[in-house]
Amino acid sequence: MTVTTTAAGTTSANVSAATANAAASAAATAEATGPQSLTMAKALNTAMADAMRADSSVLVFGEDVGMLGGVFRITDGLMAEFGEQRCFDTPLAESGIVGMAVGMAINGMRPVIEMQFDAFAYPAFEQIVSHVAKMHNRTKGKLKMPMVIRVPYAGGIGGVEHHCDSSESYYAHTAGLKVYTPATVADGYRMLREAIDSDDPVMFMEPKKLYWSKDQVDLGALRAEHDAGTSTEGRAAVARPGTDATLIAYGPSVPTALAAAAAAAEEGRSLEVIDVRTLVPFDDETVCASVRKTGRAVVIAEAHGFASVSSEIVARVQERAFHYLAAPILRVTGFDVPFPSPKLEHYYLPSVDRILDAVDDLQWED
Image 1: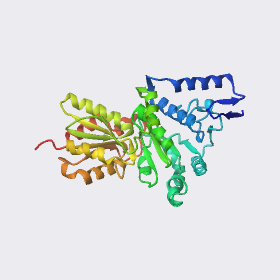
Image 2: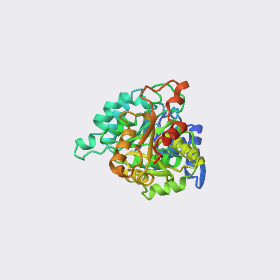
Image 3: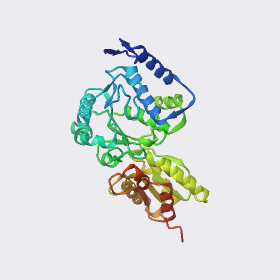
Image 4: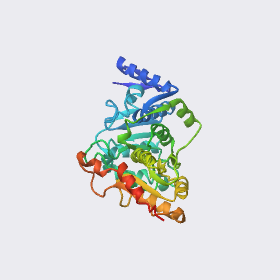
């Protein structure tokens, strides 16, 4: 099938009636205003569609992202609306996917690629570290690398190993990469739009278990925010205010931290929850301001604790707020073992009980 795309993002040529209807439905969703119930999956999908409508250089590709709409249906309808030249399937070759995206980015395009599952990105790791992260520096700023690598990551879906890794630490450690991880539906939209706009490469870590989380979201307001240049990059959010201790979390661990704070409130303890949002760049100011206020902190992450993002957060807070601490900073993380089978997953992942136990260990006695 030959499909051409107009400047307005509508498809022409020999497009089936079903395809045309799908495109019309997507356009209608794009025009919806006012608060509406939205999943994170739909927020991400809408962010890509809006970016593709706004900029013809934005392309989406990866394994099964076209006809199928992605394993998690995050790219559903994009091929129907924009045609096979702007949303297309690739061979099962992650290194080739990233390498092709590098060439496209060098030549003025803005590729948005999907790695399908976290651990599936490892065959492309050499491309990401050696070329994606270093091209701008290697060329003394002459070449930019405006590309987004979407990585569905972490657990909570009952998947087996190679489908539930938390690989954010590898990318956060790699100079030249930005690392984003949204925890809310609204941030899913706003952060993906910002990532696509960025002239630097962004590892966009999507918590798989939050794809089906829902919230009331005003897309019109989010679009207006984006058009006004409002940015979340390097800006953590106070997800819940508190006074007794700070829970620092990101991505899939934020809802768990919020649930723990709600449970603690029933026992008379006020916990502040910080949603880090962008791991790189990191918001030292917001995180440390909270810890200086409360004097105690617990860092929560699904990834292994050893040599991790959670380790870095502890180090940064200790360096900047040491004299305000009433107790050592503690962590609640995944265990330092390969991701377990689905039946054992709930033991491995941070839980409300594990977080509350850590809070209880923050040396409350004088």
